[in-house]
Amino acid sequence: MANNLATAIIGTGFMGPVHTEALRRLGVQVYGILGSSPEKSRRAAETLGFAKAYSDYNEVLSDKAIQVIHITTPNRFHFEQASQALKAGKHVLCEKPLAMTTQESSALVDLATQCEVAAGVNYNIRYYPLNIEARSRILTGELGAINSIYGSYVQDWLLYPTDYNWRVLAEEGGTLRAVADIGTHWLDLVQTITGLEVASVCANLKTVHPIRQRPEGEIETFSGQVRDIETTESVEIQTDDSGAVLLRFKGGAHRFSVGLSGYLGTQKLPPL
Ligand SMILES: NC(=O)c1ccc[n+]([C@@H]2O[C@H](COP(=O)([O-])OP(=O)(O)OC[C@H]3O[C@@H](n4cnc5c(N)ncnc54)[C@H](O)[C@@H]3O)[C@@H](O)[C@H]2O)c1
Image 1 (cartoon, rainbow, N blue to C red):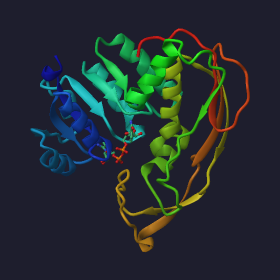
Image 2: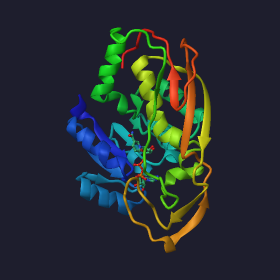
Image 3: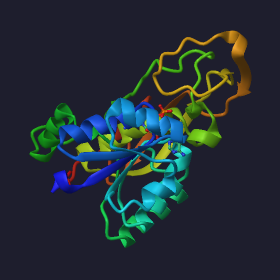
């Protein structure tokens, strides 16, 4: 079946080529690509070997050859692009975080439930072999009762005030940054491994660099471009560079810890 699903990739930055490669390894037909301009679509199609370069999103939506849309654009586009794709009857895989707010995410979940298509968010880390192994050990009871769990997700990208990407602006990536961008992977992982759901949170968020230097033009993720300080402007930052989150899980024990951490009881796990 996978081979018959023609897919369009939306976004030509860091994750667009990652999805393309992953789909090809699975034997899925990656047919067309859309960038932020017709020229970017054309260049990406050429570099990545796509048959079709789209000029705009409507062209993707109305393309009957396409059954699946993978959304790898910056967060602020997810809600609109995923909603339109679902309404157009396309299967959707959207990058995390699903949307900019919980209201938007919830509306998308409702819409996906009503539409007769498959819809998912790309929480890839839960599928790494060691994580599947950890989940399986909990499922079989090998680990015994789990009373607490803690961990962290650190990344040195965006470490300096001269580092810049669309994610640092609330209007581009959402008001939460470190927690919504990488902490969200940790939260998904822990909930998947244990089968428990977060019931409440207490968080301390910190903006380490309240002013960053924005270079002219677009900086794609991990592009490693060296920037000339002369061509930047100072921008005020309100999103979090780091966060410590204390979690209580449904049915979990109430304990205390520091870091991106949670406290768990054990329960039967649902399928992955
Ligand atoms: N699952 C993961 O491990 C993982 C890792 C990195 C990023 N992400 C997610 O992927 C998404 C993209 O992140 P990225 O790091 O690839 O960003 P990026 O900036 O490198 O790439 C985004 C691309 O989208 C293009 N774009 C912008 N507006 C567009 C539009 N309207 N139509 C088509 N293309 C448009 C940009 O030109 C850019 O090329 C984000 O939501 C991010 O959270 C997920």
